Image (cartoon, rainbow over the protein chains, first blue to last red):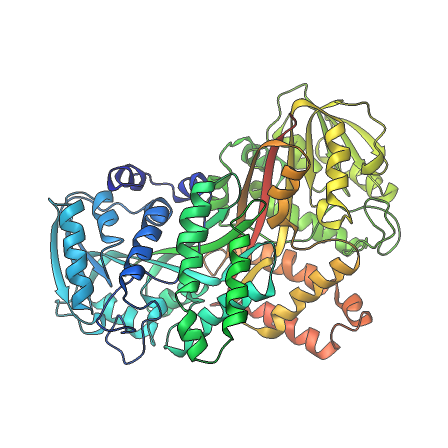
Length: 313
Length: 313
């Protein structure tokens, strides 16, 4: 999917319709892309970023964003002139779609990784050359903006990596003006199921959740968005599942999501899972082989993302 | 939700929009209701019907049908005069909504349980008095209809209870005219996840899947609809997830689905789970208590049903 078509897609206002068209609600950990080093953490914490920062990983995040753009961005369209803050923009995978869906906004994009931010800049310059974007290298917990500086906040695949999501939401709430909105998108790996069933395949997904937990994050955070936003004092909170369901009738989704997004994400954690002693190479590889069977003829795959919208009182 | 409102709901043609309105995609095993005895099998097989046939169970199936009617029936509307076959109508929980959504059809409703069929008759007489319905007591594998007798088939929460779904689909395909459609709705208990997380709660759901498996059925059948219909020789198959997601913003759904449908369903398997030696009373009750926490403040609940539409070549 190109940025041009994405623009049309994000202009729709009925996410469920878009999700049905996409045949989806899908899994992922997070394209927040950030920081330097192999496993740096997107918010400057000492814990690791479970997806790493390799070129392959950057490509995976791009593939994922393109496959899922309609699903993730449908319903998000800010009026021209709005001051919008994207937190944890990473390599800009979502940034280009955010800009395509809301032409004329004044976007500020923040990331804790200078390297990722540089990639995001290049990516946006190529795909949305006329966009007005301020780039800011920094930690979302200590943003240098005045209270109520932004009309809207967009936070996609970020909270899952944080050790203290309530503290992050409190920090974000501060820079949102009263009456402004926050949009939060997260996956939930516990929503993963598939056919043919396989204990080995399920174990590989569990390892990913475990590694993310060891890194201080939560791969099951999607189901917690409503209580988290409630606890942070937001109001008018609506959380909706956005499901990816891929079967033989959707070869594009099988390729773009099941194989190139989900399985690629799980596979990328192989070395870490082995290093952490969670599994053996043989077991892990059997699980990956079984995951690939869900993308073959007769296979099916299900994953649920959650998209939340809430207002600062 | 009453039959009158259901009629409006089922007239919509966009299931995803309806699902979003309902905030859903929900779990269940199956309101096929049938047969005599405590655990008789809906298709005359020697295996048991996991939900039993008590009055409480009949009420649960009714609650479930009302909460989920929009989610399950959206997109299903047959032209007046169509010859439609509902297989495994049970106590008529879905029958009344099927009739409300497709006024003027000529419906034939089949069930293997004479008792359930009698209840369905009474239920339909009360809620859809003008409807044209032929009631037939019999086994779906040996239907006494000529080849191609029906324009459309509706099969809701039935396949999950069958020992041989491919054989059932082959038998059903025979009575469908070429170009006619089959609609299949099933849950998938593997789609269940919730907050707060609890191993004890998850175990109770696993027991239900195990009991259904011991009875010859498959509580994880939702994910298999596409390959099953493909294998049975149908074409133009589309399968879409219909998700129930309930949180504090949807007290109606929390009550109607999480508590009165899902938890009630799991609780109804208590005696069997204990008799089968799957758990202890203490463990089971702790799991149920934890499930109830997902319906309290700050809790969330997710379940996915699948709805399939396919054509006989």
